[in-house]
Length: 82
Image (tube, rainbow, N blue to C red):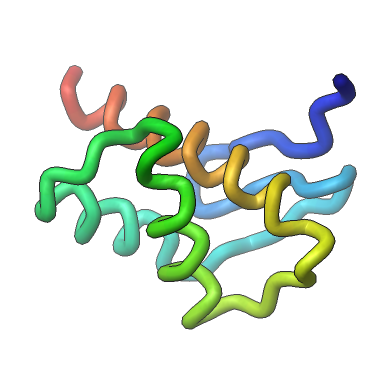
């Protein structure tokens, strides 16, 4: 299956080949981390729902956003552990 997303540091994602800047994404990750939410598939829906408060997402792109958000949150948490 072709991956249609990519996580980039600093609140940016690539969704279907387009760079998407998500203002405040590190702050969203920080809040989830404080709540003890782990970067796994169980957090995907929480990430998406939180992001949708601040950023319009087409229904057809939700799966790509979920995958990219979980990956980006995982990278964020890895950097915080180091």
